[in-house]
Length: 162
Image (tube, rainbow, N blue to C red; front, side, top):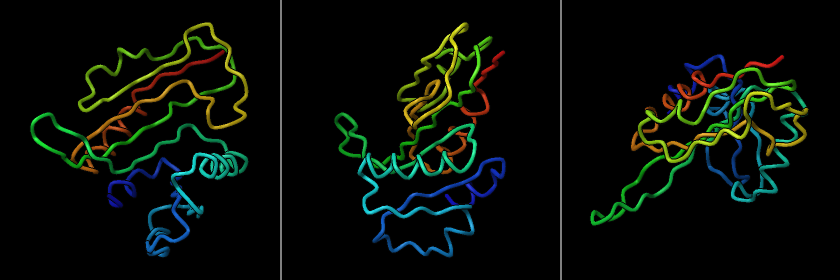
C-alpha cells in the first residue's frame, strides 16, 4: 500500500496512528510528510482535534481515509475488504459548476456518494472537518486498487466557483 501512496506526490500525506502502534515511525516518514499520534484512532473527538490542527497549518483540497473492514457476503461468510473514503474539496465562493452524484455511478465498489452542494450555493470558509462539498465511500479487496479508485474519484470531482 505504501508504494501506491508514495507515487501520488500531488498529495500532502498525513498518517494518524495510535500512540501504542508498533508501526516503524521511520518507515512511515518515508511515505508520509507528517505522522500524528493520538491515544485512540477510534475516538471521533481525538481525530477531529488532530485534523483541526492540520487544517490550521495549511490549506487542503481534500482529505481521504483508508481502513480495513469486514464485509459480510450473504451465504459466503465473511470476506475481508478495504474501505476508503475521500471528502471532496470546497472553496469559499459561489458555486458555478459542481459534480453530481450520478457522475460517480460507474465507480466499481462504490458504497455511497454524497454531494451536498449545487450550482448557486455560496460556500463559507471551512471552520471544521465536517464542512465539505461531499464524499465518496469505496470498497475493494485490494488496497492498491482502492487507493487508485479514491484518487480517480478525487480527480473526477469538479468544482468551479466565482
